[in-house]
Length: 330
Image (cartoon, rainbow, N blue to C red; front, side):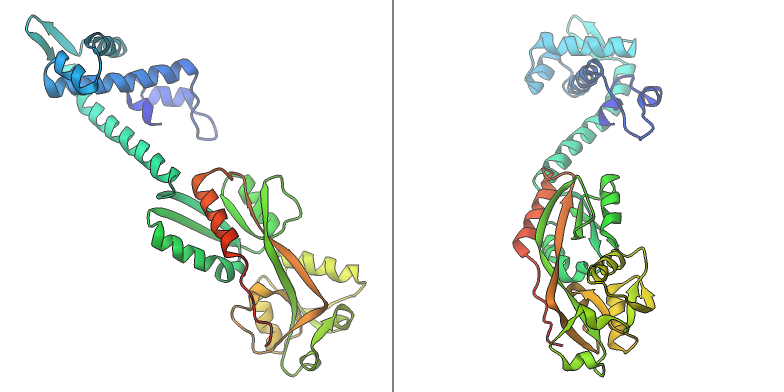
Protein backbone atom coordinates (compact mmCIF):
# COMPACT_ATOMS: atom_id res chain seq x y z
CA UNK A 1 0.00 0.00 0.00
CA UNK A 2 1.37 3.38 -1.03
CA UNK A 3 0.77 5.28 2.20
CA UNK A 4 2.73 2.72 4.21
CA UNK A 5 5.94 4.15 2.78
CA UNK A 6 5.79 7.23 5.02
CA UNK A 7 7.37 7.46 8.48
CA UNK A 8 7.92 4.20 10.30
CA UNK A 9 5.28 2.14 8.48
CA UNK A 10 7.64 -0.67 7.48
CA UNK A 11 7.60 -4.38 6.85
CA UNK A 12 6.52 -5.16 10.42
CA UNK A 13 3.45 -2.93 9.99
CA UNK A 14 2.56 -4.64 6.71
CA UNK A 15 2.85 -8.08 8.31
CA UNK A 16 0.73 -7.08 11.30
CA UNK A 17 -2.02 -5.61 9.10
CA UNK A 18 -2.01 -8.18 6.32
CA UNK A 19 -5.03 -10.37 5.66
CA UNK A 20 -4.88 -13.92 4.22
CA UNK A 21 -6.50 -12.56 1.06
CA UNK A 22 -3.45 -10.36 0.46
CA UNK A 23 -5.30 -7.13 1.29
CA UNK A 24 -4.41 -4.71 4.06
CA UNK A 25 -6.70 -3.35 6.74
CA UNK A 26 -6.52 0.10 8.32
CA UNK A 27 -8.38 1.60 11.25
CA UNK A 28 -9.60 5.17 10.72
CA UNK A 29 -6.91 6.42 13.11
CA UNK A 30 -4.21 4.68 11.09
CA UNK A 31 -5.59 6.15 7.88
CA UNK A 32 -5.39 9.61 9.40
CA UNK A 33 -1.83 9.02 10.61
CA UNK A 34 -0.77 7.70 7.21
CA UNK A 35 -2.25 10.70 5.42
CA UNK A 36 -0.59 13.09 7.88
CA UNK A 37 2.74 11.33 7.31
CA UNK A 38 2.50 11.80 3.56
CA UNK A 39 1.81 15.51 4.06
CA UNK A 40 4.72 15.69 6.51
CA UNK A 41 7.01 14.20 3.87
CA UNK A 42 5.94 16.93 1.47
CA UNK A 43 6.88 19.47 4.11
CA UNK A 44 10.27 17.86 4.67
CA UNK A 45 11.10 17.80 0.96
CA UNK A 46 10.05 21.42 0.61
CA UNK A 47 12.33 22.35 3.51
CA UNK A 48 15.27 20.58 1.89
CA UNK A 49 14.59 22.23 -1.46
CA UNK A 50 14.07 25.77 -0.16
CA UNK A 51 16.19 25.80 3.00
CA UNK A 52 13.58 27.96 4.71
CA UNK A 53 10.40 27.39 6.70
CA UNK A 54 8.90 30.56 5.22
CA UNK A 55 9.64 29.53 1.63
CA UNK A 56 8.61 25.91 2.19
CA UNK A 57 5.28 26.99 3.66
CA UNK A 58 4.69 29.31 0.72
CA UNK A 59 5.44 26.55 -1.82
CA UNK A 60 2.93 24.23 -0.13
CA UNK A 61 0.38 27.01 0.52
CA UNK A 62 0.56 26.36 4.25
CA UNK A 63 0.97 28.63 7.22
CA UNK A 64 4.34 28.41 8.95
CA UNK A 65 2.76 26.98 12.15
CA UNK A 66 1.00 24.29 10.11
CA UNK A 67 4.25 23.28 8.42
CA UNK A 68 6.08 23.24 11.77
CA UNK A 69 3.31 21.02 13.17
CA UNK A 70 3.79 18.52 10.35
CA UNK A 71 7.55 18.44 10.86
CA UNK A 72 7.10 17.95 14.60
CA UNK A 73 4.79 15.00 13.97
CA UNK A 74 7.32 13.45 11.61
CA UNK A 75 10.07 13.85 14.20
CA UNK A 76 7.89 12.04 16.75
CA UNK A 77 7.42 9.16 14.32
CA UNK A 78 11.14 8.96 13.56
CA UNK A 79 12.12 9.53 17.20
CA UNK A 80 14.84 11.90 16.00
CA UNK A 81 15.07 15.51 14.82
CA UNK A 82 14.87 16.12 11.07
CA UNK A 83 15.76 19.82 11.32
CA UNK A 84 17.84 21.95 13.64
CA UNK A 85 16.32 25.30 14.61
CA UNK A 86 18.76 28.15 14.37
CA UNK A 87 18.53 31.89 14.82
CA UNK A 88 18.83 32.43 11.07
CA UNK A 89 16.53 29.59 10.05
CA UNK A 90 16.75 25.80 10.01
CA UNK A 91 19.21 23.18 8.91
CA UNK A 92 18.08 19.70 7.84
CA UNK A 93 19.78 16.93 9.80
CA UNK A 94 21.36 13.79 8.38
CA UNK A 95 18.24 11.87 9.41
CA UNK A 96 16.10 14.48 7.67
CA UNK A 97 18.13 14.25 4.46
CA UNK A 98 17.92 10.45 4.49
CA UNK A 99 14.17 10.57 5.03
CA UNK A 100 13.77 13.24 2.34
CA UNK A 101 15.53 11.06 -0.23
CA UNK A 102 13.02 8.25 0.32
CA UNK A 103 10.19 10.75 0.65
CA UNK A 104 10.75 11.91 -2.92
CA UNK A 105 10.21 8.34 -4.10
CA UNK A 106 7.04 8.01 -2.01
CA UNK A 107 5.65 11.33 -3.27
CA UNK A 108 6.34 10.46 -6.90
CA UNK A 109 4.62 7.09 -6.35
CA UNK A 110 1.67 8.88 -4.77
CA UNK A 111 1.41 11.20 -7.77
CA UNK A 112 1.52 8.23 -10.14
CA UNK A 113 -1.18 6.47 -8.12
CA UNK A 114 -3.46 9.49 -8.33
CA UNK A 115 -2.86 9.88 -12.07
CA UNK A 116 -3.42 6.15 -12.66
CA UNK A 117 -6.72 6.31 -10.80
CA UNK A 118 -7.76 9.42 -12.71
CA UNK A 119 -6.94 7.88 -16.09
CA UNK A 120 -8.74 4.65 -15.21
CA UNK A 121 -11.74 6.65 -14.06
CA UNK A 122 -11.77 8.38 -17.44
CA UNK A 123 -11.42 5.08 -19.27
CA UNK A 124 -7.95 5.93 -20.59
CA UNK A 125 -5.96 3.31 -18.67
CA UNK A 126 -6.35 0.32 -16.40
CA UNK A 127 -7.10 -3.35 -16.86
CA UNK A 128 -10.29 -5.01 -18.09
CA UNK A 129 -10.66 -8.78 -17.70
CA UNK A 130 -13.12 -10.39 -20.10
CA UNK A 131 -14.51 -13.92 -19.98
CA UNK A 132 -16.22 -14.86 -23.25
CA UNK A 133 -17.91 -17.90 -24.76
CA UNK A 134 -15.37 -19.21 -27.23
CA UNK A 135 -17.71 -18.95 -30.23
CA UNK A 136 -18.48 -15.30 -29.48
CA UNK A 137 -15.00 -13.79 -29.41
CA UNK A 138 -14.67 -13.40 -33.18
CA UNK A 139 -18.41 -13.13 -33.78
CA UNK A 140 -19.13 -10.38 -31.25
CA UNK A 141 -16.06 -8.97 -29.50
CA UNK A 142 -13.45 -8.46 -32.23
CA UNK A 143 -14.93 -5.19 -33.61
CA UNK A 144 -15.15 -3.73 -30.10
CA UNK A 145 -11.65 -4.89 -29.12
CA UNK A 146 -10.24 -3.44 -32.33
CA UNK A 147 -11.83 -0.07 -31.58
CA UNK A 148 -10.59 -0.14 -27.98
CA UNK A 149 -7.06 -0.91 -29.16
CA UNK A 150 -7.22 2.16 -31.37
CA UNK A 151 -9.03 4.57 -29.02
CA UNK A 152 -7.83 3.33 -25.60
CA UNK A 153 -4.21 2.24 -26.06
CA UNK A 154 -3.55 2.66 -22.33
CA UNK A 155 -6.12 0.01 -21.36
CA UNK A 156 -4.92 -3.56 -20.96
CA UNK A 157 -7.56 -6.12 -21.95
CA UNK A 158 -7.18 -9.70 -20.73
CA UNK A 159 -9.40 -12.18 -22.61
CA UNK A 160 -10.21 -15.70 -21.47
CA UNK A 161 -12.44 -18.05 -23.48
CA UNK A 162 -14.77 -20.66 -22.00
CA UNK A 163 -17.25 -23.29 -23.15
CA UNK A 164 -19.58 -22.94 -20.15
CA UNK A 165 -21.48 -19.86 -18.98
CA UNK A 166 -21.82 -21.31 -15.48
CA UNK A 167 -18.05 -21.66 -15.30
CA UNK A 168 -17.63 -18.04 -16.40
CA UNK A 169 -20.00 -16.93 -13.65
CA UNK A 170 -17.88 -18.83 -11.12
CA UNK A 171 -14.81 -16.96 -12.38
CA UNK A 172 -16.68 -13.64 -12.15
CA UNK A 173 -17.90 -14.24 -8.61
CA UNK A 174 -14.38 -15.26 -7.55
CA UNK A 175 -13.14 -11.82 -8.65
CA UNK A 176 -11.12 -13.18 -11.58
CA UNK A 177 -13.10 -11.45 -14.34
CA UNK A 178 -14.84 -8.10 -14.77
CA UNK A 179 -17.27 -8.87 -17.58
CA UNK A 180 -18.75 -12.15 -18.81
CA UNK A 181 -20.19 -12.45 -22.32
CA UNK A 182 -22.03 -15.59 -23.40
CA UNK A 183 -25.28 -17.53 -23.29
CA UNK A 184 -27.48 -16.99 -20.26
CA UNK A 185 -26.22 -19.09 -17.32
CA UNK A 186 -28.38 -21.33 -15.16
CA UNK A 187 -28.37 -18.62 -12.51
CA UNK A 188 -26.49 -15.64 -11.09
CA UNK A 189 -26.93 -12.84 -8.57
CA UNK A 190 -24.68 -10.48 -10.55
CA UNK A 191 -25.89 -7.66 -12.78
CA UNK A 192 -26.99 -9.23 -16.08
CA UNK A 193 -28.03 -7.51 -19.30
CA UNK A 194 -29.53 -9.27 -22.32
CA UNK A 195 -27.74 -8.23 -25.51
CA UNK A 196 -30.05 -10.11 -27.87
CA UNK A 197 -31.00 -13.57 -29.08
CA UNK A 198 -28.84 -16.07 -30.93
CA UNK A 199 -30.38 -18.71 -33.17
CA UNK A 200 -29.60 -22.40 -32.70
CA UNK A 201 -29.28 -24.28 -36.00
CA UNK A 202 -28.79 -27.75 -37.45
CA UNK A 203 -25.65 -28.51 -39.50
CA UNK A 204 -25.18 -31.51 -41.76
CA UNK A 205 -23.15 -32.54 -44.79
CA UNK A 206 -24.19 -31.43 -48.27
CA UNK A 207 -25.07 -35.04 -49.11
CA UNK A 208 -27.37 -35.53 -46.15
CA UNK A 209 -31.15 -35.59 -46.61
CA UNK A 210 -31.42 -32.42 -44.52
CA UNK A 211 -29.74 -30.55 -47.40
CA UNK A 212 -32.94 -30.89 -49.42
CA UNK A 213 -35.09 -29.37 -46.67
CA UNK A 214 -35.63 -25.72 -45.72
CA UNK A 215 -35.74 -26.56 -42.02
CA UNK A 216 -35.42 -29.51 -39.64
CA UNK A 217 -37.80 -30.51 -36.87
CA UNK A 218 -36.50 -31.85 -33.58
CA UNK A 219 -38.21 -35.19 -34.20
CA UNK A 220 -36.14 -35.68 -37.37
CA UNK A 221 -32.96 -35.78 -35.28
CA UNK A 222 -34.02 -39.05 -33.64
CA UNK A 223 -31.73 -41.89 -34.63
CA UNK A 224 -29.37 -39.66 -36.63
CA UNK A 225 -25.63 -39.99 -35.91
CA UNK A 226 -25.09 -36.91 -33.77
CA UNK A 227 -21.95 -34.85 -33.11
CA UNK A 228 -22.45 -33.97 -29.45
CA UNK A 229 -20.52 -31.95 -26.85
CA UNK A 230 -18.42 -33.01 -23.90
CA UNK A 231 -20.15 -32.73 -20.50
CA UNK A 232 -18.05 -29.69 -19.50
CA UNK A 233 -19.43 -27.71 -22.45
CA UNK A 234 -22.57 -25.71 -21.68
CA UNK A 235 -24.01 -26.70 -25.07
CA UNK A 236 -24.15 -30.34 -23.93
CA UNK A 237 -26.61 -29.45 -21.17
CA UNK A 238 -28.60 -27.15 -23.45
CA UNK A 239 -28.95 -29.75 -26.23
CA UNK A 240 -29.86 -32.56 -23.82
CA UNK A 241 -32.54 -30.45 -22.13
CA UNK A 242 -33.85 -29.25 -25.49
CA UNK A 243 -34.35 -32.72 -27.00
CA UNK A 244 -35.68 -34.10 -23.70
CA UNK A 245 -38.47 -31.53 -23.73
CA UNK A 246 -39.42 -32.88 -27.16
CA UNK A 247 -39.02 -36.50 -26.03
CA UNK A 248 -36.34 -37.16 -28.64
CA UNK A 249 -33.37 -39.47 -28.04
CA UNK A 250 -30.09 -38.61 -29.74
CA UNK A 251 -27.45 -41.07 -30.98
CA UNK A 252 -24.07 -39.46 -30.23
CA UNK A 253 -21.17 -40.78 -32.31
CA UNK A 254 -18.59 -38.09 -31.43
CA UNK A 255 -18.16 -35.51 -28.70
CA UNK A 256 -16.17 -32.27 -28.84
CA UNK A 257 -15.56 -29.33 -26.54
CA UNK A 258 -15.99 -26.79 -29.33
CA UNK A 259 -19.14 -25.88 -31.29
CA UNK A 260 -16.85 -24.62 -34.06
CA UNK A 261 -15.36 -28.10 -34.32
CA UNK A 262 -18.82 -29.69 -34.14
CA UNK A 263 -20.06 -27.80 -37.21
CA UNK A 264 -16.94 -28.73 -39.18
CA UNK A 265 -17.33 -32.40 -38.25
CA UNK A 266 -21.01 -32.33 -39.18
CA UNK A 267 -20.22 -30.60 -42.48
CA UNK A 268 -17.67 -33.33 -43.22
CA UNK A 269 -20.33 -36.02 -42.86
CA UNK A 270 -19.45 -37.34 -39.40
CA UNK A 271 -23.04 -36.82 -38.25
CA UNK A 272 -25.43 -33.92 -37.72
CA UNK A 273 -25.26 -31.38 -34.92
CA UNK A 274 -27.05 -28.49 -33.27
CA UNK A 275 -24.87 -25.41 -32.87
CA UNK A 276 -25.18 -21.71 -32.05
CA UNK A 277 -25.09 -19.31 -35.01
CA UNK A 278 -21.94 -17.74 -33.55
CA UNK A 279 -20.08 -21.00 -34.34
CA UNK A 280 -20.60 -20.39 -38.07
CA UNK A 281 -18.03 -17.60 -38.45
CA UNK A 282 -15.83 -20.15 -40.22
CA UNK A 283 -18.47 -21.69 -42.47
CA UNK A 284 -18.61 -25.50 -42.63
CA UNK A 285 -18.46 -27.41 -45.91
CA UNK A 286 -21.97 -28.73 -45.29
CA UNK A 287 -25.37 -27.05 -44.99
CA UNK A 288 -27.03 -25.02 -42.26
CA UNK A 289 -30.75 -25.40 -41.59
CA UNK A 290 -33.06 -23.67 -39.16
CA UNK A 291 -34.92 -25.71 -36.60
CA UNK A 292 -38.68 -25.88 -37.11
CA UNK A 293 -39.97 -23.94 -35.32
CA UNK A 294 -36.94 -21.60 -35.00
CA UNK A 295 -35.13 -21.77 -31.65
CA UNK A 296 -33.18 -18.94 -30.02
CA UNK A 297 -31.28 -18.43 -26.77
CA UNK A 298 -30.32 -15.23 -24.99
CA UNK A 299 -26.83 -13.74 -25.18
CA UNK A 300 -25.97 -11.78 -22.04
CA UNK A 301 -23.30 -9.62 -20.48
CA UNK A 302 -22.75 -10.07 -16.75
CA UNK A 303 -20.73 -8.02 -14.27
CA UNK A 304 -20.35 -7.54 -10.54
CA UNK A 305 -19.08 -3.95 -10.93
CA UNK A 306 -21.43 -2.08 -13.31
CA UNK A 307 -20.33 1.32 -11.99
CA UNK A 308 -16.62 0.72 -12.76
CA UNK A 309 -15.51 3.17 -15.46
CA UNK A 310 -14.02 0.59 -17.84
CA UNK A 311 -16.78 -1.94 -17.26
CA UNK A 312 -19.46 0.69 -17.84
CA UNK A 313 -17.87 1.81 -21.11
CA UNK A 314 -17.45 -1.75 -22.34
CA UNK A 315 -21.05 -2.63 -21.50
CA UNK A 316 -22.17 0.49 -23.38
CA UNK A 317 -20.16 -0.55 -26.44
CA UNK A 318 -21.65 -4.05 -26.32
CA UNK A 319 -25.13 -2.56 -26.14
CA UNK A 320 -24.50 -0.23 -29.06
CA UNK A 321 -22.94 -2.89 -31.25
CA UNK A 322 -25.75 -5.40 -30.86
CA UNK A 323 -25.48 -8.97 -32.09
CA UNK A 324 -24.10 -9.52 -35.60
CA UNK A 325 -26.46 -10.97 -38.20
CA UNK A 326 -25.38 -14.46 -39.33
CA UNK A 327 -26.13 -15.58 -42.89
CA UNK A 328 -27.80 -19.01 -42.60
CA UNK A 329 -28.15 -19.57 -46.35
CA UNK A 330 -25.37 -22.18 -46.59
